[in-house]
Structures are given as C-alpha cells and as structure tokens.
Image 1 (cartoon, rainbow, N blue to C red):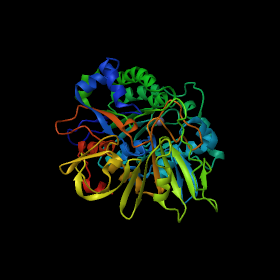
Image 2: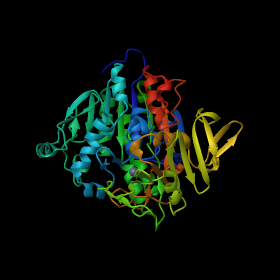
Image 3: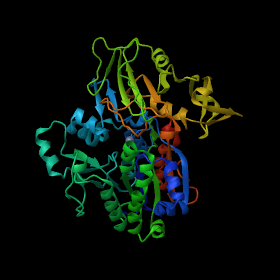
Image 4: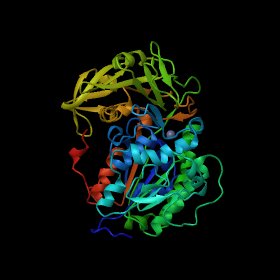
Length: 498
Ligand SMILES: [Zn+2]
C-alpha cells in the first residue's frame, strides 16, 4: 500500500446508483439495512443532499468524481447533441437505446469516449495521484486516471481488430476493475459464465463489485477506493420504489461483505473513512399517459431520435434524457418563445435557458431570471441577483435569504447546467409522474429521473470515520472537494465558480 505521508485515513467511497433517500431511510429504520445502519449510527446521515441537474447518472457520477457540475465536467446526460460532429452522442441507457444505436458504439462512448474525450474536469483519481495518493475503482463509469489498462476480455479483443470504435486500452487509476473487461490484477472473480447484453456478458455487476470491494479492503490496497453498485437504479426504473427498497437488503449485504473484510464496521472505521451515497433519486411515473413525446412541437420542425441532426429545414434537435430534455435550436429561433410554447403542456414542468449573462426559468407559476451577484443568499451561502417571480422555482424569501421548496439547490444547479453548448438552448424538466423518455423513443414504465424536482434530485449521504470538522457533503459536487481536503490536497474554492 502507498502510505499517505500524513496520518490521513484511506477512504472508501460507495456509490449506490439511484437510491432515494426516503427509501433507504425507511428501510434503515425498519432494520432492513443493518450494515448501512451501523455506518449511519457511527457517523453522520444526510437525507436531503442534492444531485446535479440533469439528475442523471453520467452527469451525476462525473460530478462525484470531479466536483464539477455538468457545464464544467462536460458530461451533461445519457445523450446529447454534438454540434461539432453533427450527431447525437449516447453513453447508453435502456437496452433498446443500446440496440437501436448498436452496442459497440454505445460501449465505445460509455467506456472510451466519455472519459477520454468528453470529460473536461480532472477526476479525483488524477488529482490525488498528482498529490501522491493512488486510487482503486470498481465499475464506476467515470474513472480517468494516470495508468493504462489493457482490455482483458477476449470477445472484446476480437471486436477490436474490426472496429474503428474500440481502443486496446483505457486510462484509469492504479487499480481498475470492471468485470471481465478491465482488471489490474488477477482476482479469480472473472470469466464466470453470464448472459445477455454487452455489459452483462462482461461480468460487470454488483456481486462482482462487492467481492472486489472486500478484496481492496482486506489487502489495504489504496488510499482512495471507489466502489459502484448500479442495480438499485434499474430495479426502480422497471419495478418501482417498493422493489428498490427490497433490493436494499441485497445492497446492504454487499456493504456488509466489504465491512467484514476489515473485521466489521468498527474495524473498518478504525482504518478507513467511509462515504456512502447515491448519485440521484427517482420519481415514480403515472400508470398511463406518462410519456411526454417531444417528437412533435407546434410550429417547429423537429429532428429527434438517435440519428437526429439539423437538416436544411430543421428548427430544433431534441434529445430527451429521462425526466429532462435538451433542445438545440437553429439560428434565429428564440429560446424564450420555445420555452413559452412548451411550459404548461402536460408533463412539462419547467423550461430553462441562458442569455445576456442571466439564467432564465419559466414555470406555469411565472418567470424568474437570476445570476450570481448582489441579492439574497441561498442555503449554501451564495448570493444571487433575482428578477421576476421567485415562485417560478418555489423560492421562499425572507430576511435577505431564501429557502428552496420543490427544487433543491435550483439556482446553482441550473447555472451549472446551462453554461455549455452541450446542454442545448433550452432545457426542460418534467412534472412528477412524467418522463420525456429516451433518445430511442422508448421510455421507462415504473420510475425515472433527470428533473430538477426534489423527487429525483435528493440523495442520501452517510459519512463515518472522518475527523471532527469534516462535515458530510450536502451536494454531490461537494464530495470531491471534501475528499481532496481530507487528503490535504484541496483546491481553492474560487476555482469552482463558473
Ligand atoms: Zn437510471
């Protein structure tokens, strides 16, 4: 093990994709998650921490790994329109999206392109390496680092020769494990027979993550360890929140297996500081008429789907991202007009766009524009210049400050989304119960996420084993700065201001 030069404990970061804080909390209070419960008992539990907007896995996992909102990390969602390349980039979501665009292309975008080409911010693995701390990563999608890892899976190796998409290796932390695809040491956990789908057949699953996580702890492998569990998100998409709660028993067993490798939770916390959190929440969908189809917008000629691009007469390219949607407009189409024509339509809760140094939000309640500046302070201490109706974003102003209602950390999150051309010209957020679906035209049936609303925006954070003064992060963008400062490798705060 690389021993940190000071007495800072190594860190174990567990990310559980898409777990709603209230679902975990009720499971924990009912005694269904004794291991995560023991962690909460020995540290701090935050039940209203906040994801980024769009509250969707690639954007949120990039925010966790880099500390940056989508506009600065460069990763804005499952799919976005690359104006330079004039095509939709898809990192992969539903099976049918993968099928429609071709598994190799999605695989390439997810495993190679996202980290190598599209991610603009430094990852924890890179920054900590520069300060002398090695990292280990299991299955987490955002993992760029200073070490080269060759593709290990032979079937993928076979594709390599004929494919212009896949490369022979990726850059990651010193220890990198992703099923049978990449592993930096032999573990004996690879090559077991599996079925279905490019990802599943590569042995990338939560059972594997738990086994490798336990091995990393047992071997005291690295100062910074990131282990990712993703099944709880897909269970919610397909079967709803009750099923997610049931799955938490399994997830808790995985956590318990990792803790046991250190002799139990108390033994673990003697040696490690532990953070466990989700990347976004989940919003249950209505039983019928839940899909908001953006393939037709009145008065606009729209290009949509996986092959969407601006043709000669197109006014807009539309890229749905679950409960958010990115709209790219042709020159001469006014953002405000498009927002006004869409807000109030069934299932469209909010539209947001930027212009003239302001961010604008429109809901059926009213319009508000804002920018950092002199004005009331948000709960995180940043002050904002506001014009218009604060009720548009459910702000509650009193005494030079304001509280958020239905849209947690809304100003910061919209600001951190709108300032990149990758997000398009107008960004939509869906009403609870509705979804814009996937870029393929399909949509999840039971539950989805991506919006600015609290349902899919709130996440849990459990923090234990840290020293006094190391408060648990309240936003997923605070995780990386907190861990950098834990290792004595912090960045000055002003670097993070957009
Ligand atoms: Zn999801």
